Image (tube, rainbow over all chains, first blue to last red; front, side):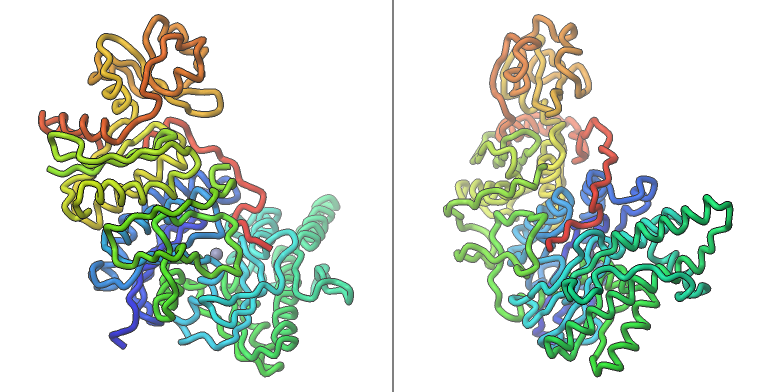
Amino acid sequence: MADEPLVLGIETSCDETGVGIVRGTTLLADAVASSVDEHARFGGVVPEVASRAHLEAMVPTIERALKEAGVSAKDLDGISVTAGPGLAGALLVGVSAAKAYAYALGKPLYGVNHLASHICVDQLEHGPLPEPTMALLVSGGHSSLLLSADITSDVRPLGATIDDAAGEAFDKIARVLNLGFPGGPVIDRYAKEGDPNAISFPRGLTGPRDPAYDFSFSGLKTAVARWIEAKRNAGEDVPVRDVSASFQEAVVDVLTRKAVRACKDEGVEHLMIGGGVAANSRLRALAQERCDKAGIQLRVPRPKLCTDNGAMVAALGAEMVARGRSASDWDLSADSSLPVTEPHVPGHGTGHGHGHGHSHDHVHEVAKDNLYG
Amino acid sequence: MLLLALDTATPAVTAALHDGRTVLAESSSVDARRHGELLLPAVDRVLADAGVKLDAVTAIVVGTGPGPYTGLRVGLMTAMTFGSALGVPVHGLCTLDGLAYASGLEGDFVVATDARRKEVYWARYSGSRTRVTDPAVDRPAEIAEQVAGLPAVGAGAGLYPETFPDAHGPEHVSAGALASLAAEKLAAGEELTEPRPLYLRRPDAQVPKNYKVVTPK
Ligand SMILES: [Zn+2]
């Protein structure tokens, strides 16, 4: 439909500079510049390195996205940007760019939530999100179980990791096995040739008294590291394929078990899985198997839409426009710990939406202490 | 000519409009922790005060620091994005040069701003328009000999009176001064620099504990 909102979305919460353009639920462009190679030698994302890379990459990535989409900036109906959660300094680069872009073009600005964007991106793959939708977000930074009744206004956290994120556990085990960074894809590859039942690794927080929807991967990570250590100390070869398969099985077993249980408990018939770990082939297979058995519809976007990107931010921005949510103000701040219960950061009520020329005399909110920490 | 100048390399969040002859409007506020929030409203204000729209601007001038990185990037990112959206050139200007220009001092002096971590960003000048050393970042005690006897401009001077006993204003840069200097240079046919940040330090290679994204529980 031609009258669906045309929105450009900017994402800089971590190491990817993402700019996406959508028309309603149709993906037009998904341009990404990554600084991942600059971080690899540190074994993780260095915030200052990421922020510097965002500054360099931003304008070229915006211009590339517009070209890819074949649209003109003046035809946009809005600009959306990840306002949080994420790395404070990295977020601020994207927020600064989005504000300047929206202001210069006279378009409304929507500061949106990164986690809600991970859910909303599925609209670009499978059409409008069913309401409600259960979402399992798993990546190097997220392990959350969220219930979304309305992606623009009502997202409820049911559970989250109490220690490491799932993707972080993959990275750490890959490092112990000397497989490099990031760990997810390489472990997935080795695991395909290994036996998932070769070694019985612990399933965190699955006891009868444990919280039903929270996750813990720290104990698993330690158990795998100890097991490898013991092999090495005994002078034996470490069976990389079996360790990979057994470790991966422990992670995806817990993730899918808890996600399916949450769907059943809440009477939700749709489960979406997002975040970088959603690219894991075993997670997809086991989730499909368990959802089929429970009569749940599984929706997993293609891997490129699961990792951090601008398209997901544009998708949520377009939904904000479509549902008439109020735009953010020009003093929108980056909030490194924006709660998932706030899918977007609405303005203080004056609203802008029509570009230049009006003042904001209201009292500013107290700044977030964590921004320059 | 209509220049929009921005600077976020010092605790000041500052924006100004300059028509090639004079500063038409300026907005400055000092809040080292809220550059990101305050800059766009400041731009909005100077445009409203001057009664012009952003698309009338013919070039952007931005302070390239040196300055604390998180704040510094706000001005640069805003300037670069404006440049792309409006299709106008974006010029960089060393923030210390803006301070030197605003001081109006004759003869030899230094400009020093707060680099945090007990260091200053600084450079030497010979007259308010001529910088004679590259901007550097150092501990005040380590450069005491090099700056001995010289007047010092900028908040860095006030912070370290032992090294800089002869402190002069202004403390922070103003976009009005930056714009005036840029207008002078452009009129004289001088090339301004690319809008690239003067970081002067390598990034801290610290991977935070939950290094990907801080996810609220
Ligand atoms: Zn993410």
